[in-house]
Image 1 (cartoon, helix red, strand yellow):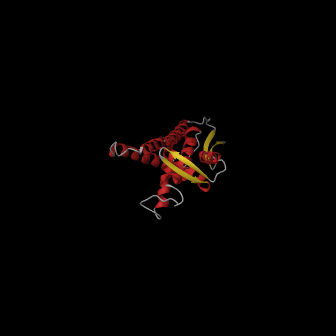
Image 2 (cartoon, rainbow, N blue to C red):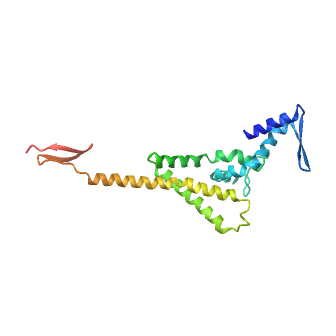
Image 3 (cartoon, helix red, strand yellow):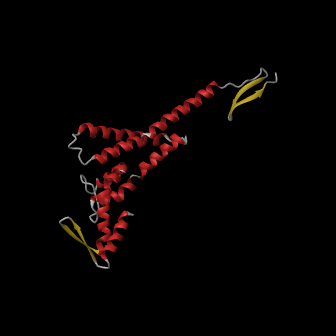
Length: 211
């Protein structure tokens, strides 16, 4: 949306001309009409790519997988887009599985929905990985080396907490299972001497003793 708004403003500033002349201090740039949308995308993405990358930092895992056969050790991008524009457009989509995991964790924690142990294990491992990377960046690099990477620290901290709902949901499931087991173990079925407690395919049943 901000890209479309900027492209619309460029169209208004042009007053019907086929180009727009922009002044940045002593620097002047002429943007032709067919480049207005591209120019708006580049400007908006350059200003917003860091918070977008931070809030969607798990998406970099898929970004790396795509880059491995194509351009590794560099992150791949189409030639038509800048690095900032490419990450701004793609990282929210690459991060959708991570958002789904956090949503499932909240379902298990708040709505008490039973979650498969595989989902819980993956979320717990990702929470630990984000926390490990966060501590490693804070303790293993100097303040000078961390200049310009503050967005990564914020992103790792956010997702350490985000994925953290999965191990919490796991512990809640374990406690709930233990409480059910204890309640079943402590429950008794009163019966008189004329009744027998039998175990059938449908569970515990009472059977009458006639002799």
